[in-house]
Amino acid sequence: MAAALPIISIAPYFSPTAAAAEREAVSQALHTACRDYGFFYLDISCFVGESETDELSRLARQFFFLPQEEKDRISIKHGDLARGYQSMGQNVTMGMSDNHEGIDMYAPTPKPSMDPKKPLGGVNPWPEVEGFQAAFEKWIEKMKTLGAVTMQAMAAGIQATPEESKQLQSMFSDPFWYFRIIGYPPLPKDHDGFSCGAHKDYGCLTFLWADPTPSALQVFLRPNPNIDFDAIAQSAAAVSASASTPTSAADHHAEEGGERGVWINADPIPGCLVCNIGEMWEVLSGGMYKSTLHRVVHRSSNYRVSVPFFFEPNFDSIIKTLPAARRLHLAERRNAATTTNGTKNPGAGAESELREYEPVVYGDFLLNKIASNFDIENGIAD
Ligand SMILES: O=C(O)CCC(=O)C(=O)O
Ligand SMILES: [Fe+2]
Image (cartoon, rainbow, N blue to C red):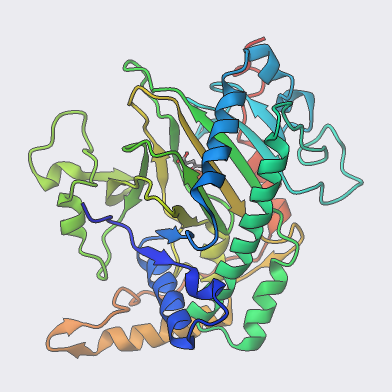
């Protein structure tokens, strides 16, 4: 079955001999994917070998299969309440406990003056699993490189001038990255929640590596004039909105936050990461790029592992809408107004105005989000 989400290879941006037109095609594809889906597959096979991701999965499982008290030794509770291990149920999305455990690691403390017992003031408590820290530190470096390269490609996709592109890169010169290593046991039949509840990511770019488990990650697609929404709703990727077996495409239609759409599976593809944009790109693009709802419903019998890496702005970067986004949006709106043979041109859907967003200091925004993420008291075993 063809993937419902676009697949984009970043290879031309890693190849010094790639033609300008090849890079342009990548940038254009990133632009339309972010505008129309907010999600895409990023083919990184030119940059990451399968043995590297297999090793991450092996190490993660080794940690998660340790006795509970071993895992709790690096609990977020003993540290700065953000870095470290969270046991089952300790992670909360929209006020409901998620059915997973995980480890969160962040870039070094942005300000040495921060309280080591307050969020982000501490150090990452690495597990004592042989090779764990070295393998994940290598992954961090790779994902930082991938983030910088993808941002360069996206700056071209949004048609930033060289000066604007430089400004954008400077907002990410010392990215306040973080990543999670998540372990998902099967969701019990009588569980009325989710493995990970519906949410949007808050930052800039999420690079998700997940093991091959199918039918776990789901993405909420809303109709827009540039995608064949009905075909997607009828495709095998669409997930039934109700628990009963769907009989028609209409059964797939769902509503989230008052918006109509369809949940589709975003199953892993070998050599690719699942990539999505977070709320910071929504601000940068004035709402032209959508931070898209997603969730995990893992009902098969295996233990699933995923490693989302969040490529984020510098802690003190001020994020505001790029002038390039306004120009491109206007150009697309003009283009959409003209029709060719009675069909709308690409860029249709740009009829509405861009939204006005208040500038955001990324670090302040992040600290606010972290405060609502964990149920430290109730989710922990002891
Ligand atoms: O495990 C996954 O597939 C997704 C996790 C996720 O969306 C997140 O941690 O933000
Ligand atoms: Fe997410």
